[in-house]
Length: 318
View (cartoon, rainbow, N blue to C red):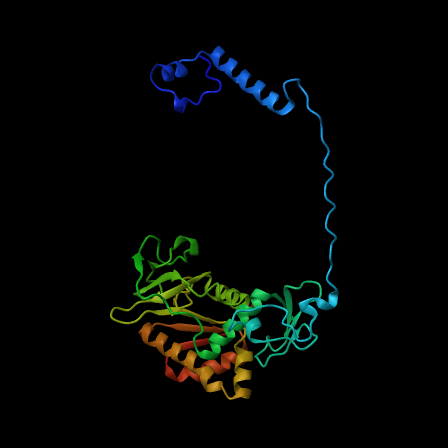
């Protein structure tokens, strides 16, 4: 029986057994029959078939919209879409312009799209940043104005003690919801992932890492029976092991804006409450606030100093 055109699923009994017991020569012969059938189906039994040429259809004519019909050049049209509450979703450029002049603290007092790179913007201080960085600075300003600089720590975490105390772990060594105990700066202190690190502006992230040497980490104090209180870091290299807080660039412009707009009391409420929580959690242990800008350093020192043992240090950003 020739099996070249047979489907083994249709065989049964002795025929199916014969199909499995085929010799290599029989399998080769069946393959040759299949190849011959494919050639005949394509070329015909005489070995050729008439070639036919079908003229391809002409390509469609390209239609280019006139420059004046493009939405980006319409008077007053926003240059970028934005989600509600975002910078580009809240503010529109000037008519016939790529420049935004919102009533915001510097450096967002002027945001102008660059000519060479549509996704890059020049800010009021002359820096060139991406549209994503514009949004991060805007969100950071809004949080600081509302007194909620960073999200607080998680309520429930899994404690671990895998690493030696006195060494700052890498962020990759911790998992979300995990805490690495380290009593170097506080008996109930430990390292946790910073949930707000990536949402901060690049300058704020760089300054926090400069001061704490703990990129994307917080040092969180969890006193028994009390709420968790976060610090930006723990100075494991310092014999006095102070708890650290980093106040990076941007506060000076916010303070100036708050004094002119009459919102300085609201702007002060957040840092004042944070300082009070940290003092209560420290239980007399040293705390250092490092502030990048001199006017902001004076503002924080005068705001919080009467309340307790926080050492304020003016440490410019590198």
